[in-house]
Image (cartoon, rainbow, N blue to C red; front, side, top):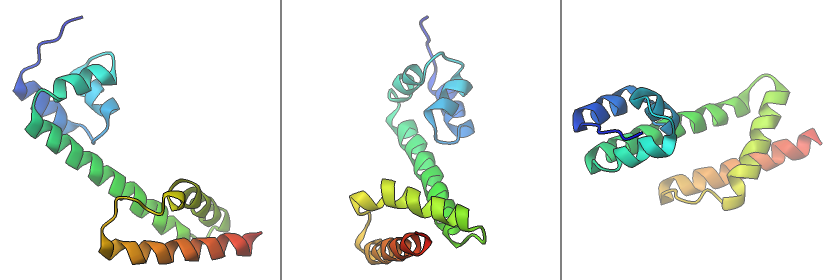
Length: 119
């Protein structure tokens, strides 16, 4: 099926979506994320806005995950620590600026200690 979206239609979809391709797909009412993203790429300034929303969503998820390390439920804390160690610590938090680097390195050490204490 051929779609001819106007810039305004794409703009409205980007405004409504939460920074995920799935949400963009739903708002454009297309069958695949790839199709939605292909149409978005035709408008670089809207692609930038979409990427800003995506970064905001990732920041929120990261903040929530790190906040859950302090959970009163030890299982929640442990699962968060394990997730961070498996998915983030292995890469040593690539793509961070220098100001965040030492904080995140200390966080890794703290998580490693927490995991050792639960064994």
